[in-house]
Length: 93
Image (cartoon, rainbow, N blue to C red; front, top):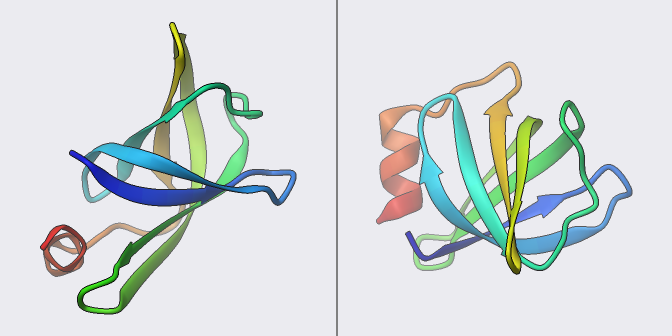
């Protein structure tokens, strides 16, 4: 997927990342370069559909961090919420 989303890190820094995968309970994102996060950190996952104007903002727990070459991958688990199929469709359409 080539959808640009943002994450707000524990230090309050907001960064754009690319969405690789998403489900009702979590997501995988990737950023070129490094990210100052570690497993079990709480971050904010935010996705915007600029065509429809909808925004989804979800507190998330970092389940895993993988650094490969120039990229950093994060596995995220949404905290206390799930995305409904309707929300996923709005985000991806």
